[in-house]
Amino acid sequence: MARKPRLALIGAGNMGMALVAGWLDQGLIDQQGWLVIVDPVPSKTAQDIAQRFKIMIVPSLDKDQSSLLETVVLAVKPKIMAEVAATLTRILPQGTMIVSVAAGLTLNRLQDYYGARPLVRAMPNTPAAIGRGATVFVAAPSVDEQACARATALLGATGIVEQVYEEKAIDAVTAVSGSGPAYVFLLAEVMAAAGVAEGLEPALAQKLACETVAGAGELLRQRGCDPAQLRAEVSSPGGTTAAAMDVLMGSGGFAEIMRRAVSSAARRSSQLGVQS
Image 1 (tube, rainbow, N blue to C red):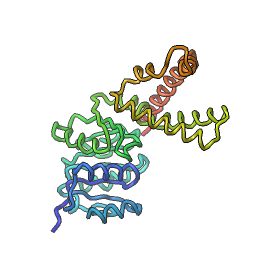
Image 2 (image 1 turned 45 degrees about the vertical axis):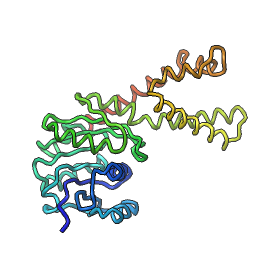
Image 3 (image 1 turned 90 degrees about the vertical axis):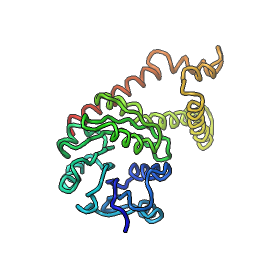
Image 4 (image 1 turned 180 degrees about the vertical axis):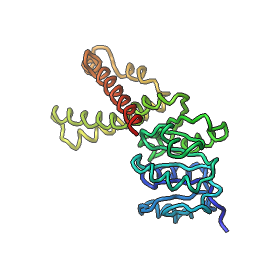
């Protein structure tokens, strides 16, 4: 007989399945029933992975399936969290740790939903889908050192993971890394458009922009994440890059726009937390 699950993933969407892929890759789950995936309408991808790795996938949990759960990871839309919580709180053991990756839901709101259980609020980002994510989490005081280590291992399976100790930092995290991939995608988009304006064929401009952004990101990662130093190495005095930097770093340029953008995203994150 398969063992009862110790870990449940609620929601088999893109982020949920990115986590599962990371857990499998890191050897954090086995094929003997330790994980259960809960989704009433799982995608074909989720079904295929569940079948391939002999992972139980069910439309909902019952009390027997949840009796030994140590951790529940919530990868659901914030708008259905109340509905999910109404079901889970009736069957979960009181000591089960809840890890939420639902954007905007504060620890206080999660406590409203799930009561005095150990609670973790995490902010991942979309590169988690390829194992290159950046996730930051904050834990409620009820989460002990062992449970924090478990959360770190589970969240870190898709990339780097960092813990912060004041929840207000999550708004800035959301603005930098949570929303950050969109800034990079926009950079590639506008670089390509600018290349077209200078006479490049659209397909070539897009390929050059995308590969340049991707390659620069990898170089940044491999060289130790010192963007100012790498920028200086590219920018020869009086050269073409320096001419571009004069525009991008001038008054009203890229640095100022990025500060305004991140500030706006952080402010909106804070507002969503109040409204949730």
